[in-house]
View 1 (cartoon, rainbow, N blue to C red):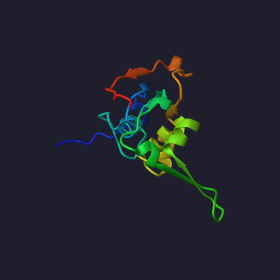
View 2 (view 1 turned 135 degrees about the vertical axis):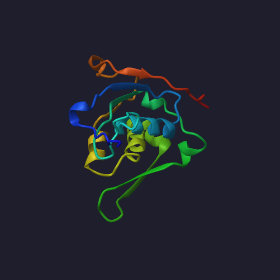
View 3 (view 1 turned 30 degrees about the vertical axis):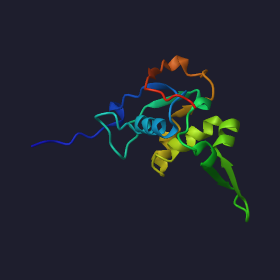
View 4 (view 1 turned 180 degrees about the vertical axis):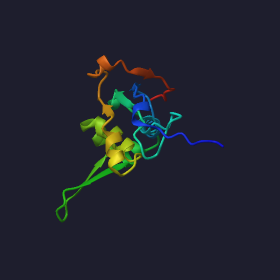
Length: 149
């Protein structure tokens, strides 16, 4: 008879991953990061547990949009007051807050629960090439890039 193996908190081995976002397509990068944060790449994955790893993303300002998304994609926020809907295009957001674009893309791919909040806290995004997590010795994940233009 086969037994189901359940992950225990002590069995979870958390690693740190470093991803360079320069030249990477936003959605494809976000799905890769969401898988790492959830722990779906591990054999001990359980949907109700946080088995994922920490992810550090650098060069968020150099992420690439395909097609006309840079001009057409719109981010919305609301103040909570009548008429308080604010819109920002991806181009404006990339100029003003490049880290928020990646955070929003990854956040949308995580569960909308307390577990999703805990997973999201393990994501660290930086606009430039520098990050303060060198002491954790993150491993660099290398994927193919797309030419800008």
